[in-house]
Structures are given as structure tokens and as C-alpha cells.
Image (cartoon, rainbow, N blue to C red; front, side, top):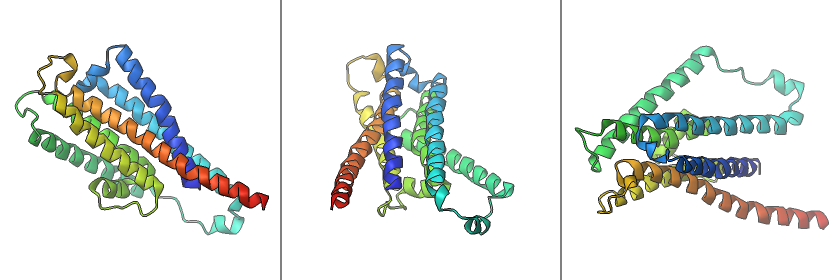
Length: 234
């Protein structure tokens, strides 16, 4: 039940702040900057929100288990990671992130992006995809598990957090692909310029994934609370 409560907070928080950011960007006519380097500060804001959710999960778990930890268990607990171990994890994260950016860039070019021109736009779409599909799973699952979920090597197996992260990745990539459909259409709209539709599609797909997870989690939690109330009455 702890994981379900964390997912509820995780998705609820995203379902509130994410549409607000998109609305403000659209209201200020800056949403089309998704294909420019000037959009990077917006991505940093989004990742800062992910850090907040990660810190909340840590505090929630510590508070939940605080009363169950006695002095003997505290003495027998595992030591904290050494600085060398932490440095290796950080180094592994950046190596995988850079490798993922290269893979995304190559895949985008293979799907039809210009190779000799629009380097800033293609690079920016690569950064958006890497930010949305890799950094959040790394925060909540760890680098190795995040990579396994991204490549499809890790199945949910009843873990709703892994399932949620996998859904975020799939919907983000699906939104990117669907956004590319409007680019070749002869409408001559400013939002059809590469890679604006793909970038917006990725952001919308990421947001929709959280709404789907929120609805599914509420559907699971409500029957559980009902059965618990009935059990107490009996």
C-alpha cells in the first residue's frame, strides 16, 4: 500500500504542475521554443520537480519505518555508500545518458530528421527525450533498473513504480512519434516546424501517462479502502 500512496502523490503532483507549466508556456508564446536550446531551463524546472517527488518518497519511507526500527536493527544496518561507490554511480549515469543521447539522435535521423541541417533542433529533441525517459526512472529506481526498464529487459512483476516508469517512457516515445505526423501536412502552421510537434508530443505523452497511472491507481486503492472499512465493521 505504501507504493500506491507514493504513486498517488507522484502522479497527482505531476498532473497539477505539468499542465500549468505547459499552459504558461503556451500563454507566453514560448512553447515553440521546445526545439531551441533556450528551452533547457524549462527542462531543468521539470527535473527539479522530479527531485522534489524523490525527496518526498525518501521522507515518507523514513517516517513510515521509523517506529519499526529498534536499536539492534540500527546497529546491524548496512553502512552507507562510500564516496567511491557514489562517484561510480554518478559516472555510470552520465556515461549511459550520453550514450542514450547518441542513440536517440541516430534513431531520430533514421526516422527522417535532416542530417546536414537543423542540428540544434535535432539535438534539442534528443535532450527532451533523454530527460523525460531516463532521468526520472534513475531517481526513483536507480540507474541499472532505469536502463532495464528503458530497454524492456525489466518487467513490472507487480511493482507499480516500475510499471508507472515504463508507461511514462512508452507514452513519451509514442507522443513523439504521433507528433511527427503533422510535420509533412501542407498547412503552413508555425507549430509544424521541425521538431516542435515531436517535442510537444513528447511532453503531452509524458503528462498523459501520469493521468493514466493516477486513474488506474485510484481504481485499485478505492476497492482496497472499501474492503478495509467493511473488515473493521465486522
